[in-house]
Length: 353
Image (cartoon, rainbow, N blue to C red; front, side, top):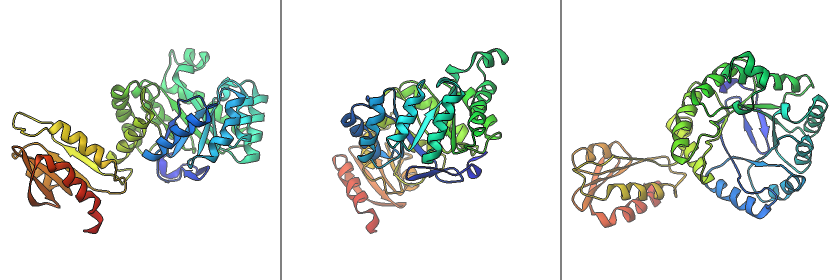
């Protein structure tokens, strides 16, 4: 189903589905057994707006670490399980708020049933995750390759396996590094299931390529009303995943809050250090996550004043100086060296106006 009508699922202290806000997720890349390092990374992610965190649980030591990690963080923790059903059970026994499994790779039906039994006892949601890279051989043969149809059939087979055990506290994720295949798979799946969908473009690449692929893929999926949680998967600092996810949601009009920075691309008319200025303003804006305004950084006097007037606050550059513009009105000229201190002052006192 589409976002407004999916089943409501409680994950720790958060709720998804049924038209609730789309939540941003990331995954730690520290050894989960290293509690101190994992907690430190989660705290960094919490500070920039991560709302659900996933940790890999490959060992019993990692499963036991969840108990201590949960005591030191404020967002729900999802245990990521592969191959060993005992790790799923141990993770739930140690306080995981949700588990992520592919029922097809943790053993036979009896093992899946045991995982479901413990989840039911503790009312813990199960995320059924299927990736294109692990699609079953029979489905690859049936559809003559890895296809959106095969991914969806695989996911629904796993969902039905758990439903047949009398459990429906479920979330589904289907992922592919092929952006358009991933989009098509979500379009197919949304019409076939009532469960919330976690959306992401898996193995999307470095910060540059991953952001572009994720922006296109997530944008196409989310704009159709599909998706209840998201992750931007990047080969880089995990904090960048949260920054990108927030910007994608804000650009689509699916989230408010935070300063939107607009800036011109520079041209031969630019007489200030526009590139450095724009980066400094973006860093400054990140320090004010509760302000829901637009700040413009324009490099010259040709289009700058007009563009900046459309923002709540702006700078239109000249030769070593610029115009401070606020709510469409030119306030005064300021030297280039005072751009950042002036903007900081305005942002710090914005709610006093």
